[in-house]
Image: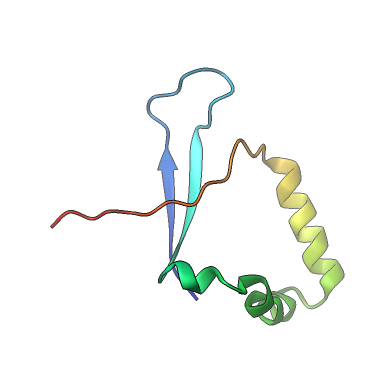
Length: 79
């Protein structure tokens, strides 16, 4: 389902509230995102062992982050 993860650094920050790190998840195509929550549910439950453990891990991660924005983008690779 997921082909790659990428990390971007913002070298041109416009102020103290601008983002400094961007995390990207690469999917095969836009259609791969349709129904993704349902597809990932069994995988994440197997990894965490229970829905409660999964929720605790999610809550812990969210407490560490400040989400500035969420965008859907397309990578263009020049040949």
